Structure formats: structure tokens, C-alpha cells
Amino acid sequence: MILMKDIVRDGHSVLRAQAAKVEFPLTDEDKKLAAEMMTFLENSQNPEIAEKHQLRAGVGLAAPQVGVSKQMSAVLVPGGDDEEPVLKTVLINPTIIAHSVKNAALSEGEGCLSVDRDIPGYVPRHERITIRYQDFDGNILKLKLKDYPAIVCQHEIDHLHGILFYDHINSTNPFELPENTVLLE
Ligand SMILES: O=C(O)C[C@@H](Cc1ccccc1)[C@H](O)SCc1ccccc1
Ligand code: NI
Image 1 (spheres, rainbow, N blue to C red):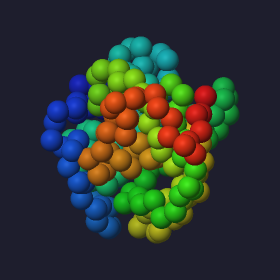
Image 2 (image 1 turned 180 degrees about the horizontal axis):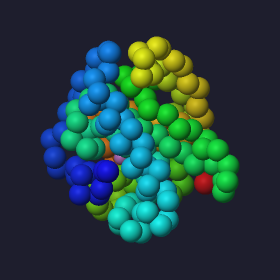
Image 3 (image 1 turned 30 degrees about the vertical axis):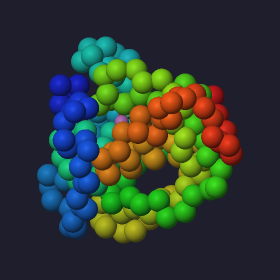
Image 4 (image 1 turned 45 degrees about the vertical axis):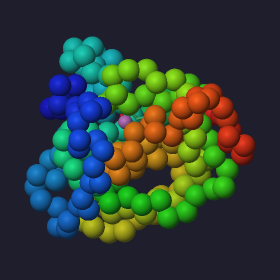
């Protein structure tokens, strides 16, 4: 089971590396890692388990964050209580193949399981994206997302390319809102 002690923190080179493409067929190790990353997200969103194991809540986790420099990220965006998740998938070799001109940023800014400090500021991202990625069998799938799920997936895809959320924050004016950027509450 992945615990907070297994999550690599900012300063470790793996978080700034370009992760390698995942090869197919997936090895048993790749499959196990994908499952463990998704289980971490489920556990982190379960109050009892998160409390017991002192897990920080997460809606996404990328393989480099557990020290594996491969292009694989798990995302789990919950729906409301007793509802199905808005998005639950493992993105293998994801690329953003299209995006809106309009940008969006979370009004609360962003955090990261690999960054143990608060870094205030808006993180401008695409409001809408189309992601091409592969499933466990290597089939190529496309996913169109907008708003919060799109923000989450961009945060996770950034991890595969050595980018952290605060790289996007305007260092001179962190709360400057670029034009054509909407704030998501
Ligand atoms: O570190 C990660 O990659 C997981 C992040 C993903 C994320 C952060 C900010 C905005 C979008 C995605 C964690 O989920 S940060 C903690 C968190 C938990 C619940 C909701 C939002 C952020
Ligand atoms: Ni992160």
C-alpha cells in the first residue's frame, strides 16, 4: 500500500525529469503500480483510512511521485456523496492533442502531494482539453475534459514532464489573472 512516506518530495530529481514512455505489453510491475496508485487515491479520499494512515487527500497521482519515471498517472475525481466518480482512470502515455484558447485557474490555487509547502497564486491552465492516452491493453483512447477534471489531468500530465504547479504561477504577481482566464470556484 502506498503511504505518504512513499511519495517523493520537491527537490528530488525524479520530479524534474522527463518520464519515459510506457512500453506495451505492460509488465506485471506496471499493472501493480497502476493499481496501487489508484488505491492510494481511494484511500486518501476515505476519511477513516486517510486518518488511520495519515494520508493527504489526493485526486491524482503520477508515477514519478512514487519514484517511477514512467508516463503513467492515476486520477480519481469524486462525484457527490454516494455518486459515481466524475473521473476515474489511469492515463498511460497521455498527450494533450487539443485545447481551448480560453484558460482557467482554480480560485484556491493548487497544491501537490509532492510539495510540502503552500505556494499561493493562480495556476493558469487550459479550460478544455482533449487527451489521447492508452489503456492497459495499449488501445488508444481520447478523453475530452473541461473545468476541474481538466485542471486535475493537466496537473498530472505536467508531472510526467518534470513540471510542478508553481512553475505556472506568475512570480511577480501570483494573483494576476491573465486575460481570457476564468476562475473556477
Ligand atoms: O500532487 C498531485 O499530483 C495530486 C494533487 C493534484 C491536484 C492538485 C491541485 C489541483 C488539481 C489536482 C492533489 O490532489 S493536491 C490535494 C487536493 C486534494 C483534493 C482536491 C484538490 C487538491
Ligand atoms: Ni502534484
